[in-house]
Length: 95
Image 1 (cartoon, rainbow, N blue to C red):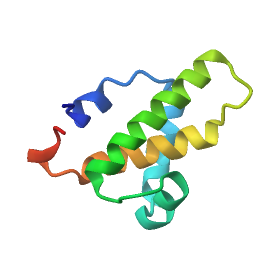
Image 2: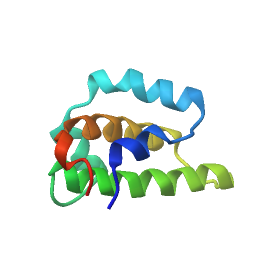
Image 3: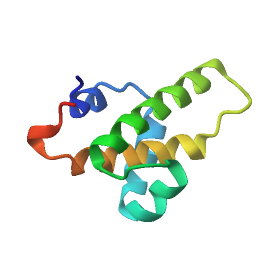
Image 4: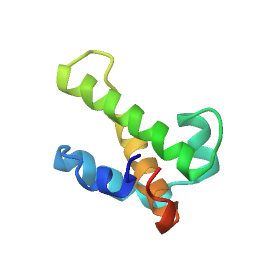
């Protein structure tokens, strides 16, 4: 069981990456953007878990300096993650 809000608040990422994601939150359109990022159920509980996994994978790729790292994809995932966590009901934030 994880409290996604607590996990998100403990993320330590480069300030520029987080600032870019915050700026992009205004242009986030759930139906359009989630189709590009994920497949499957669109319930916030399901989505947040998968976005957390994807963000962790991207962070590991970034830290390793791998050629396949996409900063644009990382920002897209962070934007979706930040918005989707806000959509979770307060009492079901722990999954």
